[in-house]
Length: 284
Length: 235
Ligand SMILES: Nc1ncnc2c1ncn2[C@@H]1O[C@H](COP(=O)(O)OP(=O)(O)O)[C@@H](O)[C@H]1O
Ligand SMILES: [Mg+2]
Image (cartoon, each protein chain N blue to C red):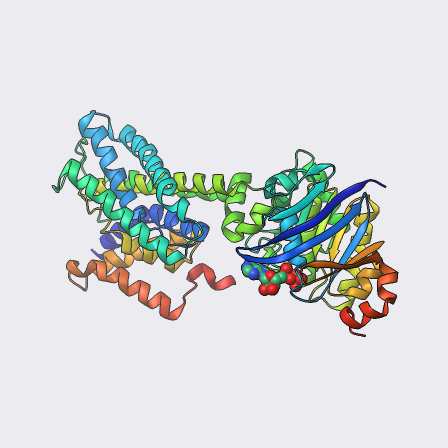
């Protein structure tokens, strides 16, 4: 019974890991928590919905389309809002990102309305294995999430551009002096972060349902995972996301599900009090 | 001698706050030039302006016959003018190897050969290729910062207090390496707190104070000048 909650928690954590890594790396790179990641999740979910329901694409293609659309939206938001504000204080940028979230959310509400929706996917029967109910979609989601995390990690540690991204996050003036095109690096990170968040939004819509507040319901957990993992650490954000996902699911065994989102707040509070640098901050 | 770098009547600062108020300086091909001066004189500001981080408000900078005032940092390093900042001059979160790769961002080809050269010059780094730069000692960090600058085959290095905060033995090692790098024909502008040691090292030196070039001459002559000793070298 509780093993089921653990498994569900791992799936939730896998979904959470994508926006958490994006949120964490963008925070380190741009020096402010970009709450618009919440809206990017919703944009991704609705982009896939449009392709899937409107254009009749199979969900896999719709998912790829959602990656592209969300990446583009994130890039445009950066161009229009954050780039002109680069030199501002983190607080102003964080507030601006909340403003962006409201705008995007309401555009979605205006176009698609407030209803709960679902993707048009063939019905599959859940497998039962060692007493666990395991959905086919849950396995797909977990597999793709793990693959995306691996790709992100390989990009960041093995490619010149990925190393330049970490260098820019670490010390922007030095990166500039060495000739690294920091604005292009930021643009690329924004595209990648948008794609990760958009892809996760589709997973979330598939795992639960789709509505304009889809991302808003997750952003506290994303924030908690990023802080828990240590800002700027991709493996940390992944670990943080798994822990948050599992604690949230298993937590519903002892507290009413209505208070599920309170768990995220509680984790943020505990981390900030006990270990503000997060799990990965241990080395410094 | 042809001038590698020639600066005339340079003015620059932060916002409305003018720090450099008429700096003149010249570096010939393959020469070491030392800049000394009290804290807050504008030495670091001068190097940042040369590196393209600060836009000059007046005056001229010419490097290898090209005008450089107002050029962006990536254009400056591509021309072979390489700046090593005073602080935070390595990427702490990156490994030694990754730092060298970033040092050579604008360089083309033969990266591995250049990494080998740097590690030969600084054997202390050779065993630490995978180590995070943030966990290196102060001396190793300065060596890495110098090594990063060498990844682009520079014509001129701008070094901002490379020996600051190091034990005397390490200071000597850094100065020895600077001399060795110079012997390869690379010009060097050396800003130093350790005025005695650095003035001995250079062919010519400048005294910068209150945003202006106050004195200029052979290093040994500056060292022996009574006024300069009293004002800038502590007697
Ligand atoms: N980023 C900055 N913004 C504003 N003023 C600065 C900045 N950096 C340095 N200054 C000021 O410029 C003056 C010269 O500083 P600096 O060039 O670092 O001197 P030095 O390197 O000779 O000690 C100092 O008065 C310092 O306070
Ligand atoms: Mg200085």
